[in-house]
Image (cartoon, rainbow, N blue to C red):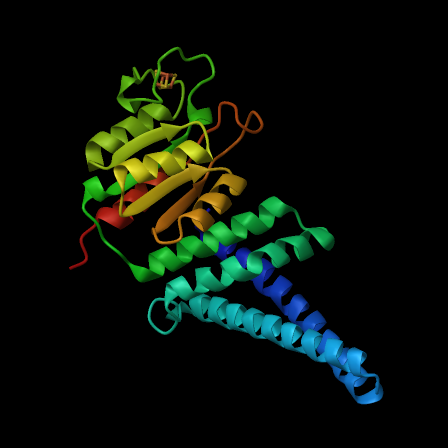
Length: 257
Ligand code: SF4
């Protein structure tokens, strides 16, 4: 998920959508200005002024989001653009971007994936570092083999490490790195686990939609999202790139001071 090719595609999707929406916003503003000049009726002029203010506010936010994404991708996101500003701006524009993307035929998942990848880029650019016990690795329950009888949602270390699913690798990673590891059935319980453990950073494995809502709802925490793999369809016997999870954990716990 985090290679340069995907990042370039994600930048293209989000900046492309934002540029198109900007163009539409500016066209709408031009039409409204024309109405203002031509129309003498007071209520039409008032409505036009209101619409113009709204349109220009939207144009400004979209321009700021577009510029900050471009700066982030140019390698200056860590210092010149406060990285969190990118996600804040994206959080504001994402609902209309999703709606517009769907309108022109892009899948919701593809836009959500781009959002999650840009969030990762922001976190990587900020280069935070934490003690292992302050980091939480959050896994979806569907990663457990559907035929497994071990109850691991309460304690992932109940896994017998038979190797039929990637839980065994996650257990080994947890032991080796010392980070907290939890497996949760859904987003609501994920939030409960975060409230309970109060981590300072999270590595979350999930599908596009869960990553998107998780990152959006937990804005104050640095979260690196790792997209799961679904060879058997959604929510059943899913998998994950273990090396990618390891890289994300090590990024958080490697001391940089
Ligand atoms: S690795 Fe663990 S969770 Fe997966 S099937 Fe084996 S015992 Fe169950």
